Image (cartoon, rainbow, N blue to C red; front, side, top):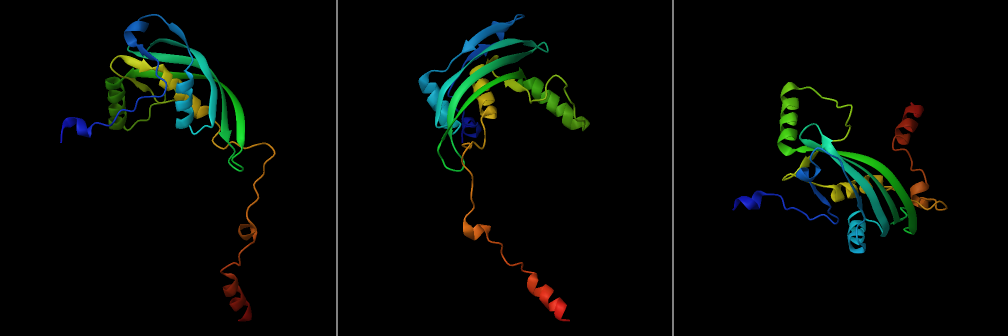
Length: 188
């Protein structure tokens, strides 16, 4: 068994937009993103969407906590999902602002180790989400934007005029198994 056999298999993201820590330096970097039609189709497949006709946005990456970065972004998406009741297409328009923080993996590991040793829970008022790692001096803001889209998608899309009617057999109340015991108790 070679050492690489133990390593997890890296999956190439459907949409990747890599920014190097060195490219940001001491200043903020602004950018726009818009995946291609093929990338949107791959994102739709990953998120179990029928279609993803629009996914675009803008972002700003700036330094954070000496060695880290913060990605402040906004996206707009137009998509179609299957209704959870009828499986008919349900169109949705999403817009969201988000913030993702990044630190080098060794700093994250050190912070988690210190937290485990102390038994303390540290609450960061500036960041209520877990910190993502900076890998080889780079962050993938494209993958982060896709993850934010995934968090914004309705987990139970439903057409407005569709209602769920349970089957008649499921709707009929079953006899209480303790009813027999109750009858015995009354005869005593």
